[in-house]
Length: 328
Image 1 (cartoon, rainbow, N blue to C red):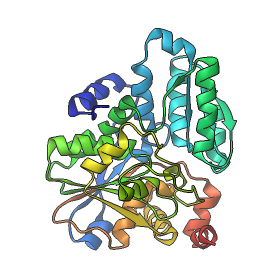
Image 2: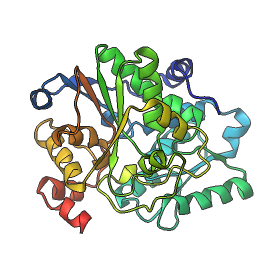
Image 3: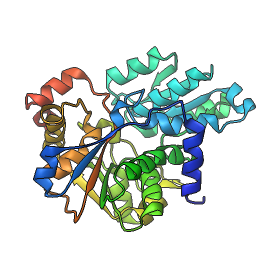
Image 4: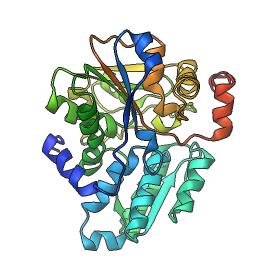
């Protein structure tokens, strides 16, 4: 499968205009002091559904034919893709069936149900949920729109990268949460096309980082999915990955892993210093800066990718308890 290009991303931007929010990018005084260079935060958690996933989902649905739309869509999700797909499908009056594992937090499941989607809770991993998706495609004819390994999804997520570079044209380093690679691949494709010298760094959790393990192995591999504060970054990359593995391998400059304590510190900083409520997976850019794991010669743009955190968990993190419980 050919890589997603800047032309594809620009087309996606036109396709989803009016369906998504062009989110702001703002300077962070506290992180700039810490890093010694200007640090900007891309506030994508303020997207309509609380995460960047709406961009890819909207572009993928807009790319379907009338016959495909009539069949309905399905996907496996750790929560945010399911919410974005359910929202985009509802706008089109389409059926959506979202399959998730028991690891997906209840608040994310209920929000998807509230959008009118059919929710299936299957097994203990995203791979288990994918088996139900495959059945729905084979037996009921639904169209699968996966959370990351799909060119229209990647192109939609890449529109975040266009907005980042327009807001901070002299950016030297871009920090992107890394899971299955749809977001990281899309942003890296946009950023590198506009300025090949910008370093794009993928950031994930140490507990079950499937893309990092796959990149280290030189091919997609299975990784046990573990409970983590960065739950939205869980799940595998797919052993038959067609697109995002190769794009992340060729376009990312580095991948950084974070402990549960470091992720919790990122969530706390976002709340206490930036006045933003961010889920664990969305706070990893901040967390990497706080942990001293980012070195940049010029301005940094860190993506805050989602806010869909259970508020009881958020209170626990802010009070300093959650990371110890998760790692236990």
